[in-house]
Image 1 (cartoon, one colour):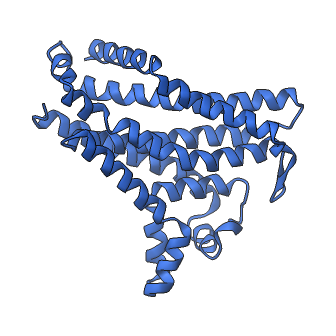
Image 2 (cartoon, one colour):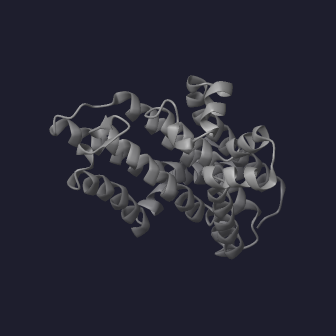
Length: 276
């Protein structure tokens, strides 16, 4: 299983590195950091944060908008696409287990998606050092792990959809609908829903915190806005009931747990059902 896993991971990585989408995706994040520096965003200020901290905060907000849908759309075609093109039948005829095939896809996708994002953050730090800006190392390390958790989460969900979907069209449609639902249930719509239906605030807020996008957004805000003023009344509930430090940990642990759970269920379904 170990040899099969390494072989499949290397094969999938090489295939992704040859893809134009990978380089376009890498240039997107690298170019975005360059544009932010050229636009002078490091000289602007938000809630007392200026310089490289200001850039990283903006980078995280953009990542929240781009990464989930990109991860889902590119991942949901992994297994079902190989099945439709008969590549899976050929690969599984080799001495490779079902788990090796599944987890190699998972790991290679994580590397291909996460490395360009991390590299963009590192480039920002190097560029900031050359500009003699203060380096917010706490933001850098926390945001690096938080981005890994976000990617891991949607990667697990995407692999699960890819395994159970009957066709690529169904997989992509399911991913897009899921993304729309998660985006719809962010702060503003949650507050509107509570006012409209007069629901218990506890139910609404905890329902919102099930949303991994909401957890990621709140976690990225907590570091530079300790009082979560941009979230309005919901901030008092989050900070009083959960606490700032506990939520920083939760915003990393929960996406990893949720992504791992869906990946485990996807692998279990893949091994126990005849999906070829």
